[in-house]
Length: 204
Image (cartoon, rainbow, N blue to C red):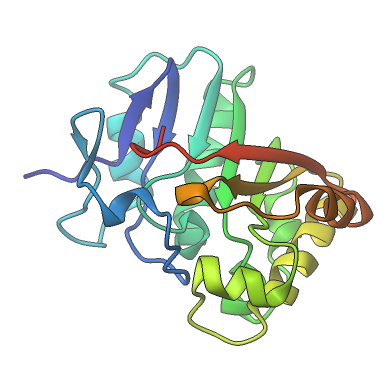
């Protein structure tokens, strides 16, 4: 089966660059199913290029927003993401571009990659997912230590670089509740807006 790199959901276009991730979140949709609205997002391989994405993108009508979000962490394919975003900006200048990320990219690349996204991305949504480091580790299960601090530093870098930044949390997973007030305070202190994503069993 061919890789689904581009898919549509609720009138918006999503780009699925990779299945790799540095988290293993307990509430992740892909733990329970292989698809989103019948679109299989498990990739057959991780070798897709920016041109592969662009070729699929041409089959869709871009009307409002393109979101880099799939079954993995999109910034693990940083160069592909940048090339695709540049193509969109050049050919569809009125289309908003957003990245949904776990905020680990600077740790992965051992440098601040956020300046590379300026002018290419309109908004970055970062998964804060916890009011404390302990809670974050329990819910998100990162593969490295001190991940929560890395997430907060990434959020601040996005804000400092003038990119619209939203810190999000998943609330209500199987009846579990987190301290939303504290999470909002942390988000605001880092220069980000705050968004609560109510957990929905089918993920959307």
